[in-house]
Image (tube, rainbow, N blue to C red; front, side, top):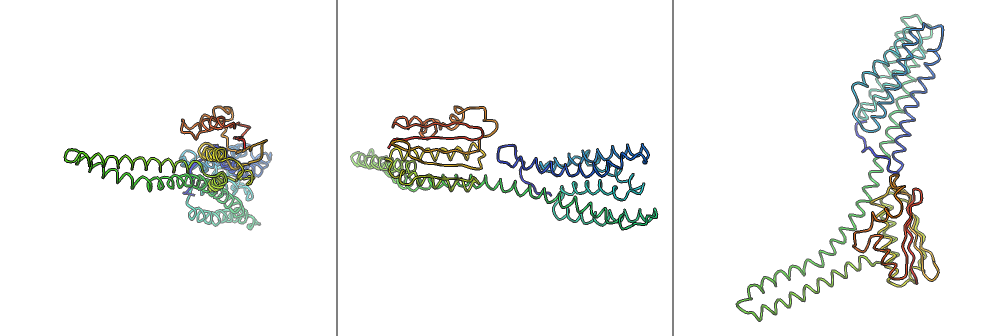
Length: 401
């Protein structure tokens, strides 16, 4: 069909595997049906050797052409004129020779397969219209040939082409439609995750604007007034600047309070928010948190664990192709242990090791990267580590009660 999703690389999401499997099913069906059906006839010694050789070569060329065209279609690539001509010519030969020899059960297989592959490049309505046309034209060709040759069983010459079109056409169009739907759903999953992160950033930006907007406007007005009074009334100008200084201090304190509240939300709230964001991104989340244990932790360690949850969630959305994730909080001696893992390690990262994976999200000194969080946890007697185990990335944080 004409509307297709963006081609995806093998990113561990499973979509690339679905694409490969779809191609193998469709191309394999064409190869098997043509190979088994025409193969016996090609090997029949009663048929003239030259005709058998030409039919066999045309059949193999048809199989290869259909495979190439299917690969281009499923990757959303344009059709190639060379392969279109090759497919059309080989199909014509593979059909014409058996038809001329009265093989009414064999001749329609190659045309039905090739037409079914070619219609996948058309919009949905035109594709089904073309298949409907083939459903009428191919049986008509078989019927006319059978009547011209004096074939007694003309019904067989008519229903066999119709059967081949019905067997190949809906299968090709249906399987490729399933691939399109899956790819669009994956695009929607990724977009939902990005929108969830963007929504959180907009919320924080709106809170910051509400706090800073009024203060900055008043500071600007009073600074302008002080500049005008500097020569005419120095004492009043100085008083105005002291007010500006006080306003700036208030704005700074409120901004720090906002950022602190943003970073030091409760652990339960962080896990709930992470679960919601990951679910919106299409990640299946298992959250197993001991609520009493979380409530019993001191504010400092509890806030740090909340930051670990936030950072691990951000890294998962940005750097992985996870389909499942788990967040588990359990007792650990006199404190607690938080384990967050996912199955989204990309194939290219499998040999990179924990150090590289951790440094990717170090955060550059803003206090929220994994490396920075590890330092902060060490400072309060806790520990943070991350490991890569197969396709799983596991973050483990421990704190003391």
